[in-house]
Image (cartoon, rainbow, N blue to C red; front, side, top):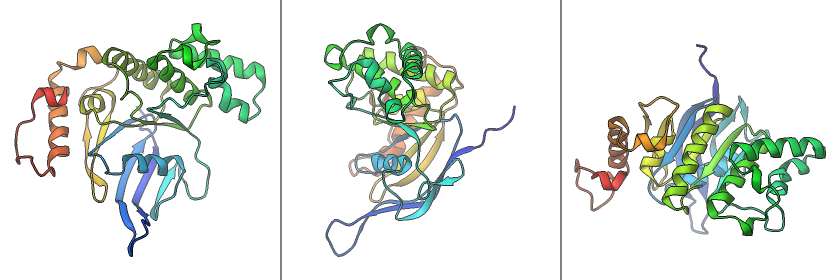
Length: 273
């Protein structure tokens, strides 16, 4: 099988912020990472380690203070980045119907109405929302709104997907359903996905690799390979020894710098699953 090319490359990426003091605050420090086309990468780490800042850099919403980010071989400093973004808060327009929300990015590009309808039908089917096209967000549950947000992100055929804790506010049953749907989309659409989460099991269950970050400043402690090939089903992963061991290992990496953590301590199953 032909090896896939690098989709995203980070080379010595740093990001500083001026907080009004004498010196700028170094939020991200010397990040180096290669992400293959079609790969699902999860990012975990303690609060304040710069996960969301990193997503902003990948989306082209800000630029590195130093270093370089390449997408398809082109620098984000010099080209516009075309990515889909899914956040925790859904960010749907309440005055638009489900279909109109999904078609919104296409309307900005003056895509003809007939083509917009074809695309919205296709993407709503992917997330099992085709029967709700004429509903408004206020008529939907939180999980349904997040499905619409995913469909909207996919509608413009983005170069890659960025997801910032998209399932954090959902109940466990809905969360598991959407995790399975995301795995299905990752397998069938072959999209590169960068997924930020605080849930260690979620990271190991969804991703091909997990980037573990440390804070002050944010950097990569380790990139962990998940030893379970696709396709996967969330329900069967919870008791799978390889996933249980991977979640324990990632949890130990995250907790290593916590002041009240004992070096080498065992992480209980309840803490990671």
